[in-house]
Image (cartoon, rainbow, N blue to C red):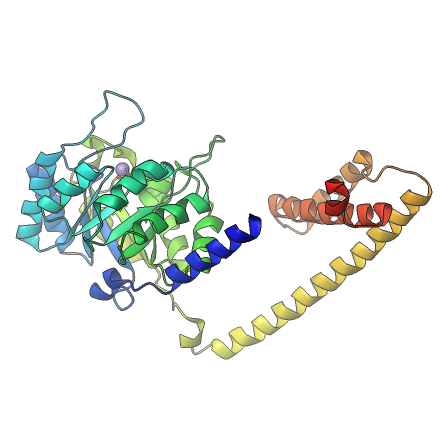
Length: 384
Ligand code: PEP
Ligand code: MN
């Protein structure tokens, strides 16, 4: 079963890998880097939509966004202007020529969005947690090759994100992009939604050709985090960014704290440092190569040291077996952790990362010692 799943996953990986992404070739995502989407969280009135679109037309924005169906946490909040909002968005598109995108959360939404000439659809983070809903949207798109941008689900589950992309792709949508908007976690942080960058980066590693965008507005939840989050995404080689821009952000009917004026948005764009996307493009490439060579050497040392450590774990395993001592000794492990924390602090290494590394080392060490004790693999022992 496990192997079947892996094979299945590999095939999916290959199919996503070989997809054609017309969405971005049409809008020159690579040459017009970064690809930019912006607009209000919600379409609130014809005037608000038009004012923001006119201002954004003067910037490098490629795509105008606005929500007309808003997934709100509590009832009795503003839930969007619905079909009326689509009319305002269409009018703004006709006047400014900016292509448009809205969030769809059901087949009925898809039908209305198409009726009002929306150019790109996006699937929201709350919708993405429900495979039934994503499948129903995907089914309603069969035969319509409209570009779709897929947000990550609110929970940090990369397979659910990939599954959503796959459902859309399997229904014939070849113009796809993913968008990272952070994750809900029980522990609160300075972010509205924790970035957990390793998850979108893993998506990029598995599907390098799938355009990956970032939504700093929903990750940060506040204006002052927009610049550092955007710069981080650019430095991590994301293909584009989405921002919430409002004519009077403080009065916005949803997500007021994270929206900015078109003027502040233009100022924000000016502050970005756009680095070279491929190391080979840089004149300093040879010195980068030297640094990489040193890193490779250090990695070898790390692995040699790890191997040496494991041979001592095995020796300890043999000693414990001979003297009939239990493999796991909690006091000893606590001592190791205390010492490691102390050294990490001295060397200014992140305690969090160092503890994670030692957690793996301990697991491997216990596995080695168990192997010595039982004379076979722990897995085979467990099956007995
Ligand atoms: C949005 O972009 O307006 C939105 C509702 O985002 P998310 O689905 O990421 O919460
Ligand atoms: Mn919003």
